[in-house]
Image (cartoon, rainbow, N blue to C red; front, side, top):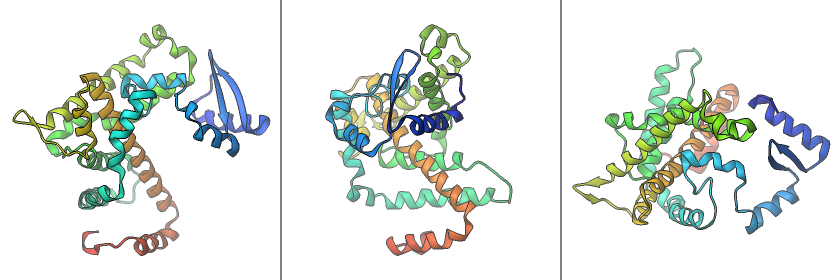
Length: 283
């Protein structure tokens, strides 16, 4: 009950080892189930009745609204329909120049810092994936003057930290206790940044009072859907965070592993080169 975040996974592994592939346990007032047996996982993933998120997902609502990541039902289906075209291969291929340009900026930034000392690459990669997602999925090109509106990207860790805190420490699920805790100031800070970012996106889409639209871009579809301000901010930040944060985390992990296992770097490069046709002058 009072374990640290780093203790959660080892605790779950012990429960699975001792009790099998389907384990029930209580976390404060809420019943939770650990599903690890493939046959049970398949049942959960294929069942339409399990689309409804569990009660712990409500702690995402203050930041991401009730939608693609945290919701279910009509709004969930609506947002899924809006964003699906953005991930088609034919659409992604049209953005290869953007991927290449932002990747080159990232390489340049990392090269400057590569002086033999340890440094955290996640901030540079988060900025890179942020720029890519904004321009390709949201149709908003980010320049140097816009970075002040995007400060929340370096606080995504805080956002997920607050969500995880309330999911795993049942006493913070009480609104009175949480509202009077030292974490609530951080909650107010990141909530304000998310709202500012959502409205910044909307204002960037407006020029001379008219919206510049692209029917494939998710943000345009959201605007066309006549959502209110709260729904728009939740939808826009959900699409951004779900795409940007996961990509940044995976990319950082890949680079970390490649840095640790230097002997396979050339092998990985040749494998990618054999699959993708590179313009070597742009790398």
